[in-house]
Length: 99
Image 1 (cartoon, rainbow, N blue to C red):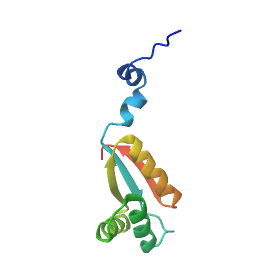
Image 2 (image 1 turned 45 degrees about the vertical axis):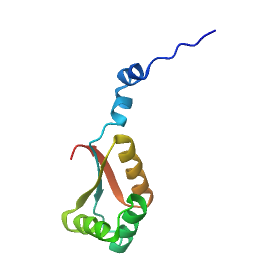
Image 3 (image 1 turned 180 degrees about the vertical axis):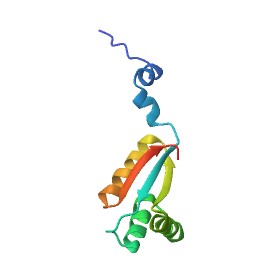
Image 4 (image 1 turned 60 degrees about the horizontal axis):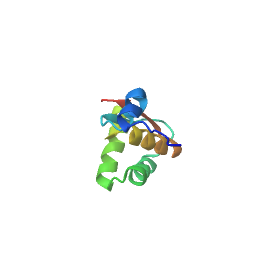
């Protein structure tokens, strides 16, 4: 008995959440908090996002002075992953469309 599989367009068209998962344009935001040391935030940015020291420092200072920093613009799937990883390290992070 042959099994008929739907094509990829049908799968994503019927499930808009899947269609959006790989669209670019999702921002990962890190928010200021009174708990984490600046040196720790730099360490996490380097570890999770692969930033070099100057880039990690710049984003940490933006979080510190402005209350938040957009640390990545990615697909929704990757933005969710970065947000989860940052949260696992104890940072306040979220993702949003656009930004």
